[in-house]
Length: 145
Image (tube, rainbow, N blue to C red):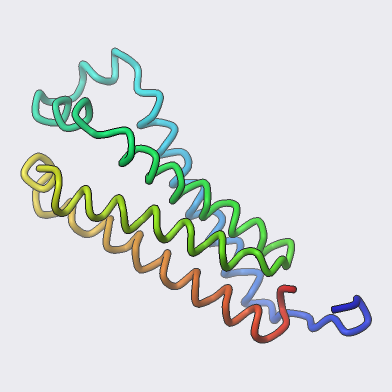
């Protein structure tokens, strides 16, 4: 698509894209805090939390990284109006699903953190799914190319 044929996205596209970027930046911050936890921070955890943290497999940590960095890169692609946002969001969503499988079925995270720990992973998954659909709609409308 040439600049002459460019379809300008509505203002709400920019608002959603910026809010999604801020959301994903918070995810990146959570990942960095988790990945680079200091000895002092580890000592502040309960024994159950520390065991859960220390027993997390590398693939679950990698899925976390893929989810948040992919989501952030996808949002940047949206703001740059690039169609590769959608495949990046799909990769991010795969990272989210892998995290959910680990949290729901392969760890005792809900025993450690309680039933309230169910809400955040579900919210993350829903936002990941919505970003895939949002980027697809943006591509179909010609807002990203």
